[in-house]
Length: 600
Ligand code: O2Y
Ligand code: MN
Image (cartoon, rainbow, N blue to C red; front, side, top):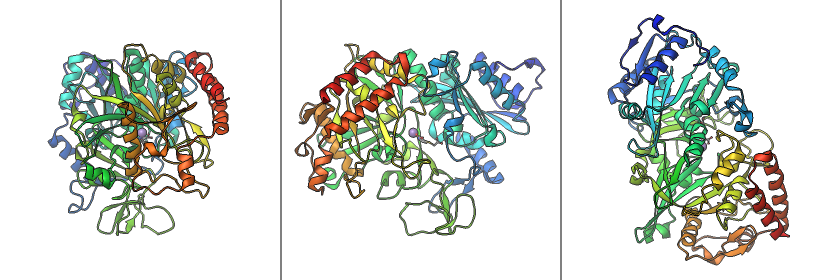
């Protein structure tokens, strides 16, 4: 707490319910209290009684609005401030001593300046409020892959969400006291003023300071701030990977399960893929898909050299709009009870409602609490969310609680590419796979601001989340190929290829299992493919396409490759890698040159 000058002994004794035997933690809590001046301190134990008390308090002050208790028992609506509805990348900083360590992929501020700015905002900000101390564990409590943190916040809504999204409370505090090490996250909603809003990360100090937002990734500090930005830095130092990836298990009819980790940028269907329902023929044959996680994956080499992964989260913070019994029946089943909905509309009988829910209901009130007028404004904000425990997901894998993690057979990168990129291809080796991830791109959609259909590079889907220089991050990835590790195969998929009529060529959703099955076949050495300069592409005969209607044109582009188009793509990848300057690993540049010259 660099900018603090208060004499700790001078702080009047506050109304507080708990404490800790860990001196470093009690000192930090006292320092924060001295700076922020709360009326009371509440140490969260994660108990049902604590949760009931907080919810009663939030119902009383309107922070949480109870929903229809018959259709959605134990569920609430929260309306955020209308100016506070999404992550704010332009206000998100990585504060490293050397600016080059943050890299061109991050906004940077010198740590002393960052602390001064934030401590100025935090000064006295909790007067009249309670300060909550939330010990939490990212990952199963007993897992050596898990890491702990403590979030201090003045938002009871954050406490309720952290209770669903992390292993929070007494067991986490015990682990923190045992280990003596934790990530420090300080959060205040402040005045919810967009002009006094910053999310700052101090990776060298394992510290996060977030002010002025109560929404999602800005405020639930265990998620993007800790589990990706700070964890990616920790992972680099400790020899593991913290990634923006879902984790799923595919169980074949013989009962064998392969685990796949997959990175896609936002709005590319990660939650849908993680909760995939197999097509009818596959279901009848006995195939199952198990959900381990839908957003974040931490993995490290095990004693056998394979990568073992955990989902550091315990819940889903999923996008509500578009979620329906057709697009994601498992997600819809998850949110029938014990769920916090943020910024959705409501029906006349007080059920949550959003665009694309595809039911017979009509919204009566929109996400701002105003009467819904059809055709004027959407009922739900496009970034409306549900927060729910992963244990409520019908496809939730019991292996998600395994402290050892799950062995990863394949890593998948993917983006939204209307043209050029085939349905699937396999990298020839790890270095090629790292290049495939580094070159990942996705086309902007009408939902995003700016021009539609513009291809943006989003390496490994980590552009907003990597806590250090991308060039160093690629070197870290390459370092796993050390001759001892038995690394997973790497693939690239594109569910979003369009035909000349602008329509998607691939049906997607459950049918994506056909592609995953081919990957498993490649991992097991059974499935065929055609070698090309960009990687191994299946011919249409190599995939089970029974029951899928595809025109000849669709088959040609989904399973083909356009040499001239890829030549131009590899020129553009070369320019992109140059943007990271001399830190860019030569091995990655050489790999690009190798493929570019094979393309001719
Ligand atoms: O964190 C937010 O405010 C919304 S963005 C988000 C939420 C859950 C999972 N992933 C994301 C994302 O942007 O990747
Ligand atoms: Mn995400």
